[in-house]
Amino acid sequence: MFESLGDRLQNAIKKIKGYGKITEDNISDVTREIRLALLEADVNYKVVKEFINNVKEKALGEEVQKSLQPGELFVKIVKDELVDLLGGESAPLNTNGNPAILMLVGLQGSGKTTTIAKLANFLRKKHNKKPLLVACDVYRPAAIDQLKQLGKELNIEVYSEGKNNPVMIANNAIVYAKENGFNYVLIDTAGRLHIDENLMQELDDISNNIKPDETILVIDSMTGQDAINVIEGFNNRLKLTGAILTKLDGDTRGGVALSVRHLTNVPIKFIGISEKLDGLEEFHPDRMATRILGMGDLMTMIEKAEEVIDQDEVMNVAKKMQKGNFDLEDFLSQLKQIKKMGPLENLLKLIPGASKMGLNKVQINPKDMAHLEAIILSMTPQERKHPEIIKASRKIRIAKGSGRTVEEVNRLLKQFEQMKTMMKQFKNGNFKLPF
Image 1: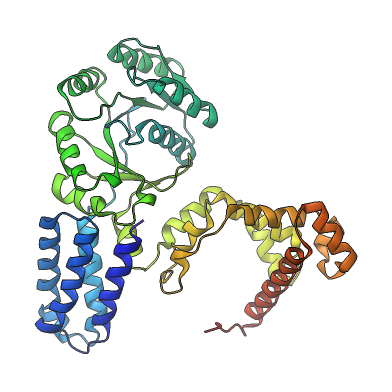
Image 2: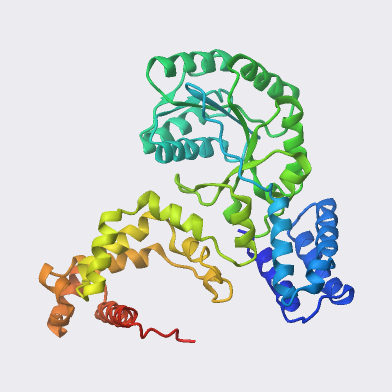
């Protein structure tokens, strides 16, 4: 997500940091590189032109000229302009209705049905309330079955009336939701391969009947600049309240995210960050700007941790670390907590300076984590508490029990000892970075 754009922008900005003074000449070199980076990321050329003009004007302003660190101020200018381009402030969902009605629309292939299931899962987890999925796509083969399967996986109820009239299905679903204590009604509408009058009329009819609190367009971010035409086509008829960009994890350019709000005034509310059913993330312009510029996103990392990590367990392990009693049982517990936060490589990208350390390009095989777990689970409770007793014969037994090699067992034990040594250094205040 934004990898190539982020690398190009960071390289351009690195040049300006070395200048003692910003002039029209040296700023032109840097802004030329930024312009090329944005255009190659498939950002609309009108947006790029306005962005560059704003950056130039502010960078040559009086405040920057008098600054002792003009390079740092330039970075702030670029970041602020990126935030503005991405929408300025977050646009939270309107979920005040009783129940709140969310209608999702989009073209076929945008990932609408999977996204509506992800959104229901997100709302349930974040607000601890009850969502109802409604199958109103009665045309696409297997659309209803797909939604039912997703609902089954998530243990979220799906309301369906087969191939009945979509307007009637939506109305009946809302009545059902009120009678059965549902907090959210999420309506999966039909899509087409392109915008046509029949599609828009049906969506119009549903919207006029149910008066949704949110009308959200689901759009494939890999569509490129044509996404703007799609958004405008839907918005002219339905008055969209927001958009969800899917498959952003598979698009290294991300130009559509930088163009959508500026050109259509439709706020981005969520982004799809993986194919998994928890792979939906609220869109925060300020956090996305810092990610693009390699400054990390600690707030998102903290939120992910708070959602899934057991705080009592963390405090318990922290106390054991301080006392030097951290063992492989605790290590196993931490592995399980980290796994709940999603793919490890995605978390590494949120660390400030990740690109400088090469962490944004790290690929971690999920099986590696599973292998570590298997090795530790093949140990006896005594071995987990006292790894120092694990000698040759025990290593052979553990390797056989876990289906791994003795070399892998040795590697795990060595890494664990290195981690314990690092913890002691932290505790004693003697820790030094290895670079």
